[in-house]
Length: 145
Image (cartoon, rainbow, N blue to C red; front, side):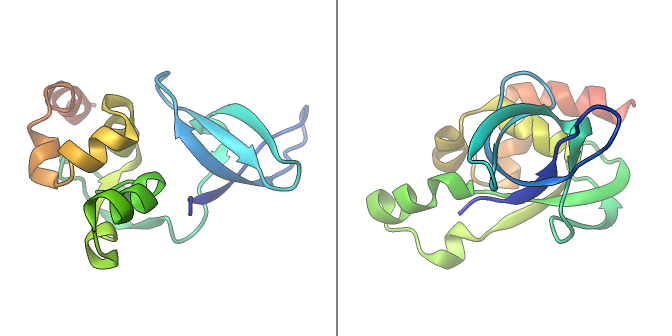
């Protein structure tokens, strides 16, 4: 089960299409999306994605960068790893469903810092994420923006 978003544009007319995030790419702010209607995969810049209501939860202070902005749910065990974590590590639904609210830039930085599997196995709490060397550097930079 993956998160569903709307994305896309054609020329000067914006045409939103339902899409599923398949991967957060190493390029900052770029996602690999699968467009539901067409079954095609495409790299899409974050600026061209309209995050679906419900993924963005509330205004607040991001625990990584301390900035006041809209926060999004980050699954501490990425959804893409849930079936593996159930089978190989006997994780229950409650454990798999744990989330933390992060601003979108910090949320994206987390997914750029490590693979989904690494996040699930090694960086599965906010405390651990706050100690990640790349995220320490990122949050220091982001907090000055």
